[in-house]
Amino acid sequence: MNISDAYVKNDDFYRSEEIFQQYIFQYQQYLRSLSTKQMSRECISGINRLQRQSLRSSSQLNIHIKVGDVCYIDFGQVYINEAGYQHFGLVLSIVNHKAFVLPMTSNSTTYQYANDPSRIEHGKNHLYQLGWIDGLNKQSVAFLNDCKFINTARIIAIKGHIDVNGELFSEIVERVRDSIFP
Image (cartoon, rainbow, N blue to C red; front, top):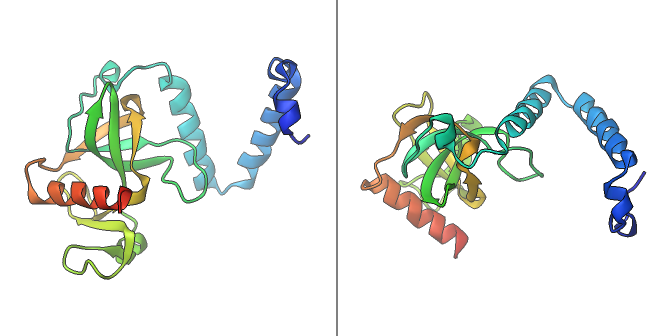
């Protein structure tokens, strides 16, 4: 079944068993097509969403975040070219139980392609080398073009912190601004 615009606009469709069965069938097929690692990430995100979706904030999980915290976050399911599933992220701002976060990775290949402060003109502009961050085991790189607000209930753990009064944090904020508003 293809879900056409006309069909989707039909209110009976939303209440039908047919859409439920179609979703379950397609989702099972999709999961079976994934590698074991990718399927695990997809399922973990799904379980996290089921368990956390009704929470207003991470404080209900006894996780009290502040700006500058580097957190392990479940960004959830994604489309291509989006940061998703479980990654680290830097909290840049907190507004009404939502955090504006900068997704990060420690992938060494991604790190090599990223800009770093000593060679800004080289590398990919949407990536920014952060180097070593206290609390993390590897050097990190930020995805400047993937910043977004999230419900803080997506935060699994606080793993590190970047001093908000320090040079690195100021540089990150400047690079994010430049990325969003070129």
